[in-house]
Image (cartoon, rainbow over all chains, first blue to last red; front, side, top):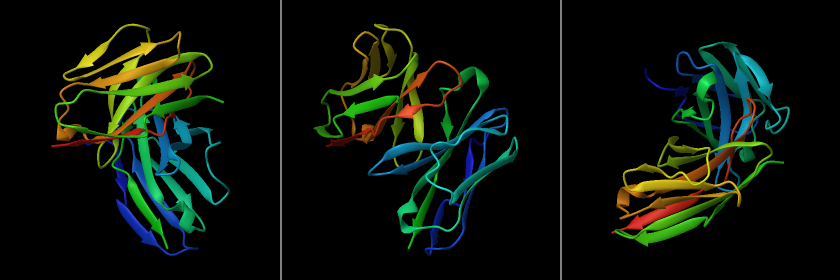
Length: 114
Length: 111
């Protein structure tokens, strides 16, 4: 398996623009997690899905952030409009029901909002 | 609110030194504690601990959990420059809940 796939790997955009981050989890995994990592705050869970259903989105910073999982092999995290304080590395991770702790992380998307 | 605190935040050692990284947690209905290593990219899984006093070992790395005192340590012996990374500790309570991560310890091993 190729592991968790994220795209793009890097994104530079201007404040106010819409940003869409994409994730393909490991096949057969039924949990998908979106994290954000900054120097100041460390790794923060934004939202997670179980069997494509959002379970907990309490970590989503505000209404500018939204996430979807239309099927078992694809998820998006959208920021609209983006702000400079959204600059961070965004990780997607997946795991399976029998081993939710052992999360496999994607390579991350490094986002810079100017 | 569940919380995981790691110390120190940053550490610089020489090759060959032994280091101990600390992780304390406050988790309702604790289930497991995990250690991850993050180099330049994504975190990679190291250990999962569920029982007190049982050491998990992988090469020069080892970890142990104390459920009474609510902490875990990660030991690295004979450190190498390739051990330089951020080490993340995370905890999970019972049920299908996600992990709560600490802010990490940045370890730098210099030759």
